[in-house]
Image (tube, rainbow, N blue to C red; front, top):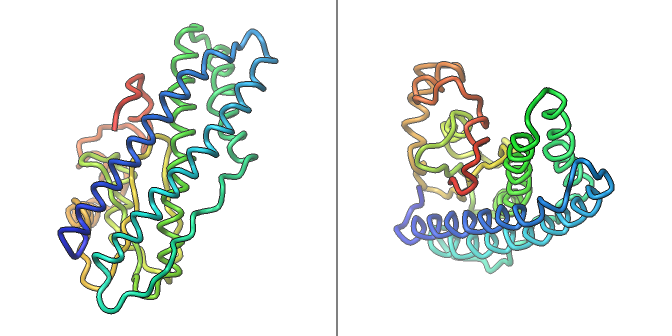
Length: 251
């Protein structure tokens, strides 16, 4: 948790902005999805090109949102004299990686589902959910990377902490239980498809955000992801399976 009320408010606002961006990405994916027809393999190329452009353009937006957040958060929470510094935006999403992610969740996933006996409607519905999750993860990763990269450059930052939703999946809760990830650990931000987590810079005197302390205690009591998930009341779903649902508006 931030050191100041203003810092806390900025983190909450940052999260809302990124979630709004994610929702707009999902809406755009839903508009593009009908352009691909599995019975017409040639239609996939146009769909893929449109998806790459969508992810790349929205990634820039995510990075810009996080850069502005970091500048305001640092001014509010960093102790001592401030050093003016422009936050660098994370590098553009790699096109090859975007294409691979889309192919696995869309084309390969749908064909595999059809081959396994799913109806066309079910295969396409599930494919839409999965490709929207992959697209939103790629987009929001630009914002996460912007914060994590700037922490490495910021002489006053001690690290960063994971900010989750009120009821995160077991995977995200486990990662949040680590508390601030310090610079020397050089740990990248891990996010699954549909993930809504963010990174908050940690300065001297910063507290753990959200329920992270509770998750740490619970992790120490359980010691395995399976038991941790059960204690959280998440059942037997995997770290990201609970997000694979037709409810695309879920946060």
